Amino acid sequence: MSAQPGTPISVIGGGGWGTAIAAHLARKGALVSLWVREDEVAEQIRSGRVNTQFLPGVNIPASVEVIRDLKGAITAGTGFVVMAVPTHGMRGVLETIRKMAGPGTVFVSVAKGFEMETLKRPSELIHEVGGVPREKICVLSGPSHAEEVGREVPTAVVASSSDRGTADAVQTAFFSPRFRVYTNSDPLGVELGGALKNVIAIACGVSDGLKFGDNTKAALMTRGLAEITRLGVALGAKRETLWGLAGLGDLIVTCASELSRNRGLGLRIGRGEKPADILSGMKQVAEGVKACHGAMALAREKNVTMPITSQVYGMLFENRAPLEALEGLLSRGMRSEEEGMTEGAR
Image (cartoon, rainbow, N blue to C red; front, side):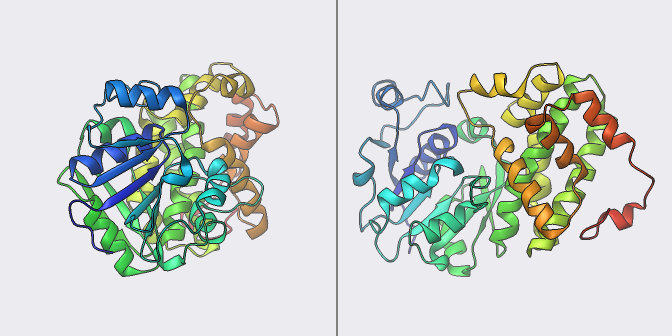
């Protein structure tokens, strides 16, 4: 699939990230259609060229066509399909659009996390439920807040596929001077990094809510990267991927930024609010909640110790108090840092 200006691209999902990607691609000259689930959001974009609910303040080019009928969002001539729906809602969407695209269409996943019931990653769902060949699937991920991409703040991400030609095509289609796209051959590692960093971001938010300092946050981020890497390598990912943009880079931006929904969730937990109460009032998804459930299941399966993730799980699902969770980390025995970077380390 070539990626020349005028290439038809369908973005499935009108949340903040899907809207930002649609605006970015339209500015590059692509023929973009954006499928939006909500009537109100669709009308906002059509009439005012802004997604007030999910991406306020970002102008959406007039060339972006808003689509409400999912069955009409993709045709055999569509060059790229960008899957920008949350992971937990992806199965139903894929069942509807299955086999609608042509054989040369590339599916680009920008979702992060796991399907809670099956622990499937977005690319696995696209392949198994959507019937898309693996070589036609690419994962686009990295440190990239939708709000900043929408405003054309300089950003760098990775396009990862098992097929080099597919990764190259996505790189060409999405690349701009302010949205740099690097290729990567380890989609497993890219997806794991994008999912697991959200769990560590919740822990960093809790630390901020408890009014601990930069020292504490730096320790959580660094040791968090160690346990992400342990699990990732045990599952078959490349260590280098998890130390790159999709791992370390995304971890930094998610743990440190006030734009991070997952850090914001942790911040409120650290200040004493109950997770269930916070989640019931959130308009956008904090992916780290479901990712934490998936991470713990995978860690048990591979016998990998993830102490930070375990304490976040306790706060989210077992009513563990934030200070109790932190003390659980501080009371762990002495150990070597080198040993802590290896698979299954205790």
